[in-house]
Structures are given as structure tokens and as C-alpha cells.
Amino acid sequence: MSQPATGSPAITLYRLQACPFCERVVRKLQEYDLDYRSRFVEPMHSDRNVVKRLSGKRTVPAIVDENTGVTMSESANIVEYLENTYGSGGGE
Picture: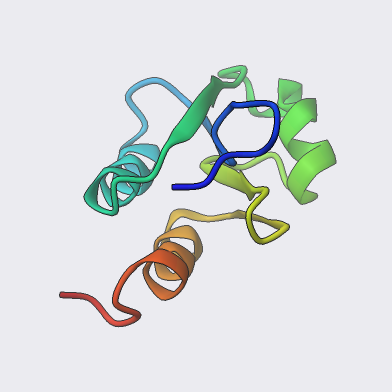
């Protein structure tokens, strides 16, 4: 997978430890062998200002994909985006 000029992965995943919704996204990233960087966020919803600035919401998971310029949250939306962008577009 391509990486930005900085050499770091193009996809950044904002997540919580042991979050099942976050793990769903991690599994999809791994399924498509996508390089990504994990950024663990504050457990307190009200303290997730970094995520709020990026996606407009404080919910996780959230991703920023520098390959496409997409920033989004909600695991179902992210999984669908990853399937459509990097997968076969409709599941296996």
C-alpha cells in the first residue's frame, strides 16, 4: 500500500483499547493488508477533542485516509468504505 512522503501509513485509526467496534475496523484493515497507524484516544467521551476536530464527532472508531482525503467515524461506515475502496466492493 502506498504511504505519504513522510513514510508513515496513509491511514490513521483513532480507537479505544478493547473496543469491539474498533476491533471490527482493525480486522478489515488487516484483511486488506493495509498499513495503518493506531492512535489510542481518551476513554472519557468528553475528552476526545482530537477526534472531534477531525471528524466532527467524539465517537470511535474514526479513520483518516490520506490516500483519498476521507475522514469518517462509525464502524459500519468505515468497514463499508474500506470494502468499496480497497476490497472487492461487496464482500468476499
